[in-house]
Length: 292
Image 1 (tube, rainbow, N blue to C red):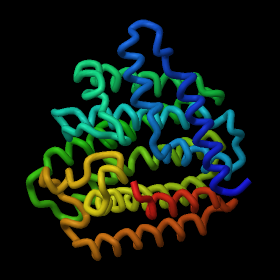
Image 2: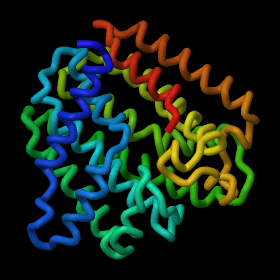
Image 3: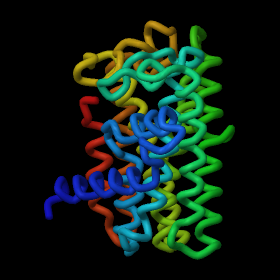
Image 4: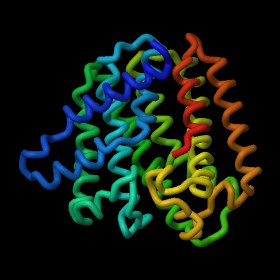
């Protein structure tokens, strides 16, 4: 099986698990369930579940041991996108080439769908086929990545910084929380499911920290370079809203250099990981070369 075929198989597997964990669209409350499924099953890169599978498989875990963690991180990601797109946040009308959830349904349904997806994520981890100790570690990992020390806190910093100047250190700190925390959690969850050693955890933490920043820098560059058709979302939103970004602070060439710095950091981290994890290297390459 080629690496691309392997990734495709993991994407298909994650789609199936998500569809199984989400409530049926025809069960009550139907509109809420429809919105949840619309948000989760409407495409996307599936980077976070892929990271769970790639990490866990590299360290010897079976796919069945990774399914619930892979679904949980994607459910949290989907909830965050729903809420980020709301008028009170980023006020976006397009996501993954389709109307955002609050446009396709309504704001109240979108808020409830996000809330419900978060709950389903932790329910999935609570029922994961793992020891009680591992399930607790999985829940704690995802909770920290989602909360004030992670994604939610990063979004708060992002909103506060809109329209103001920001240092590079502050920008990096914000993105390590807003984007990087959930990416790091996906890698850590895969490692926890596989029973990783402390040395493996340290190498993976370095890899995922660099990947989170690389992913965000590439996102900032795409917001300038891409079109709505290519991105599946509205381009130029960051500049229009006065948000600090890597290209704003460093220029396009400087942002490209910053991206390559993180690429090198990922390579070095994976070089210290035993056994090797070629799928993680492949995902790093996809993250920094993507066009959407």
